[in-house]
Image (cartoon, rainbow, N blue to C red; front, side):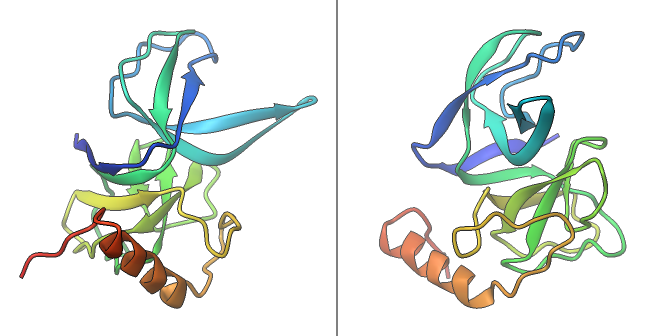
Length: 162
C-alpha cells in the first residue's frame, strides 16, 4: 500500500487514536479527524500520520500537503486534475465516489489517474473557496484549482517536468 508524502506543508495536528481496541496505525496512514461537540461527533477532514501510532497514543499528523496514497481502481475511478476525492475508511483508499457513510472528504486530485491505477495523488483537505466540500457535492472547482496550481508552482512546492 502506497502512502508517500509528495510535499508537506507545515500544517500539523496532534492525532490521538482514542477509539480504543485498535492495532497500531503505521506512519503514512490516512485517518479521519473526529471532533466531538457535546454528544455529537463529526468528521470534516483527514490527516496523514507522521509516525506510527499505538492504540490510545498521540502522534503528529499532517493536515495539508500533497500525498500519494492507495486508490480504488476500476470503472468510475478515472480522475482528472482537480476532481474532489474522498477517503474510504472501509477500504483505506481514495475514491471519487461520494455520499457513502464510510467516505470522508480528503481533498482534490493533484494528478490524473487511469481506472486501473491503484495509487493516486491528493492535495490533502484542500478547500474550495474556503469551505470544505460536503459529502455528495461536486463543486465547480476548475478555476479555483488552476489558481492553486499556479500558486504552488510560484512558491516552488510543485514542479512539472517536460
